[in-house]
Image: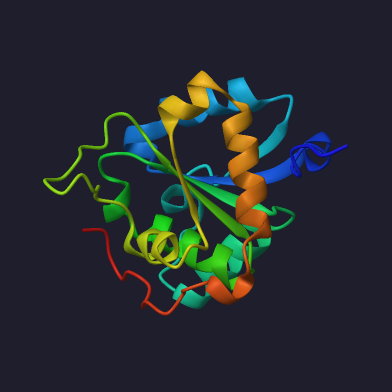
Length: 175
């Protein structure tokens, strides 16, 4: 019987890391956790800015990998109005790509469209959308059909690792 190739995988409750701007997008993360509780185990960083008191970049990257991303197969990036300006969001994307995790960007409703119908999103995410490694989906699509997110996660996890573009230097400060 021919069917959706993702149906078999959906039975596994995946560990998913959620990256977002805590100051602006916490309500969306909470809502996502509530909606997807039965199908995904969502892991969040509880704001790296508050939890890691260090200026040593290598130490912070190791903490991201070992304590925040460990055990996750994919990172979901909630893209709100100010997400693109946050250095720790960029660092979480960098660490996720270094570990060859899937990457899904979620367009939140308050993210304004630019003149060319594009959006201000983290540059490292845009690099990987352009390379066809990362999957881009809208919040409204997820609300209308939660299976759209699990399908996006599976597509991201199945993307060829050769498409990863992690060449950009890490952000040194918030913009």
